[in-house]
Image (cartoon, rainbow, N blue to C red; front, side):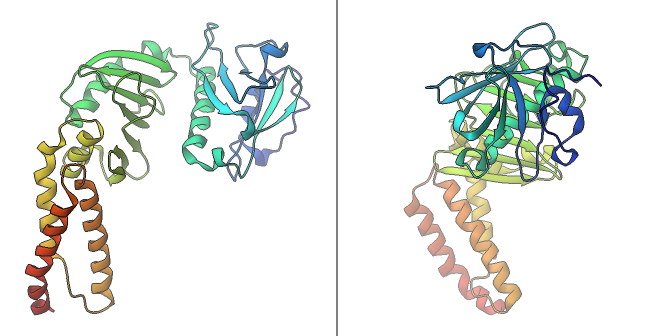
Length: 326
């Protein structure tokens, strides 16, 4: 096979360093432990970009961040990502630099930043290997409507914008925005991200489709929380999700407070306040952890003194009945 990347024969390669087909596009990795070695074209230093290569700018002295992007088949540029220059070991030539992720750096030790580069690389490869124009994929609006309906979001889709292959920004009537990333055109989603508005820099809620199940991450005023679900349909049935979602999206979450408070009261009532034996101690510790988590979540709409009083009264009321059961 002829290398698509010019002068790529000097780019050292081992089959143990990643999937071999990626070498055609100048990519080695992801390695284990995580990392990449990627060949770029740098136009500002005299490099000639092509539809089969990656482009970097910001290599000149004085720039702290590198801009990474690529070209689609029609010559249009992809959305760029920005990565600190100091997070790479830089080799190769000024026209065609080779960037290798630097191990044991604060930037790459953050898994979100690893995923950031993974998504960029995968989107680039997808743009070269899929013949369908996913920007014209009519099913995305239907999928978007199905997603928000399943999640119980009462705000219809008003806008669908392609971000890059298998990646869309979905505008909702209430002004919020949903980001959808798919694994392939038949997959409902790989992850969803919800933003307060199109100008928001970071998501307030994320839903990741993992194996097995789904993980939902909420960024509330009182901290970040995560919950796991077996199926996508289970999410909206959870009172805790409805409370956390609306809290994170700056909506009136007090409307969803009562079911969460009732759940806390149920746990307090059935809690083993005087555990005896190893098994009871393990259950006691798990319940205490859950109680502490729910109290922290409810701080978004309730005073800590009120929650402490609820806990104290429950301990006083139910600890004697626990003693009788034991």
